[in-house]
Image (cartoon, rainbow, N blue to C red):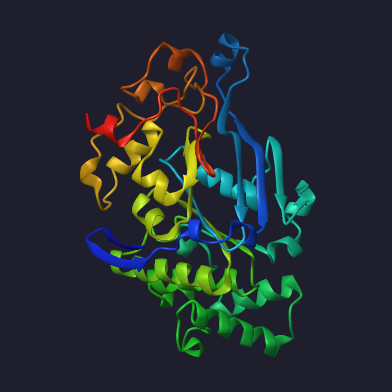
Length: 357
């Protein structure tokens, strides 16, 4: 289905990937996250310790479960503090989970296995700031060579050719004119493409992309987004996209996972969730996003995001929700099914008609 997307004033045209038209049995599950939790202890002063004996923790992730299938693009979306980046870091093994399980390609990962170099060959991550991805003292070739050496791949000439191929696939052509440059010699867009190339060089089956275009100019963002979409389609590489921008998620994703204060508020096929959200928080994100057909939404969340330390009782979104009732303030909502692969956690699910009124 053809869609026109407006991204910071730039109109993008793309034929979206319709997952409902494919045989769902043709793809297999490669990642399963089950009841994942990540708590951080809070350091307090002596006076506070004397007043309170209760252990204080930041509940960055508090019981998150979802799966990722091969060849799909999944969007992990939400405001700052929702826990989406921590989820990505925990899946990668950059953070140790407090509890829960992470299974990759059918195998439950231990903390030791998480950090094993062999796993990183199939599970890679690109970070929000491309300037922090590279050592400024090393050329791109030196960075690529180290990655491939750790992976135990190829001789020196073979590693060089693999690096050139990855740069070319990432849109840096001719690759030979880039590979011996230092990071400071590249623009922001070029450096982000180089960062994507460092992930592609080992042919991963799952790429976790943390805000990959948020620091780029609008015209450059479009090119990097198209690069990710092409890699997904041509290489059948699964992507877990972490973003706060629903315009980016709408353009790239087959499936959305909406997070709020460490938990999932709604998850389902991107087109269905964005056209007719069931959770008020999803509707608030859409209302605040420069998306096509935004005019049909008329909903703004009240106040600011609550603290991950002193979490609200009941539904975590109820202090900001105009539809909240007593049950929302007292009881956590159970998951409800809206359709095939579409679930939400809300006592009073929304409809387009309700939001218009």
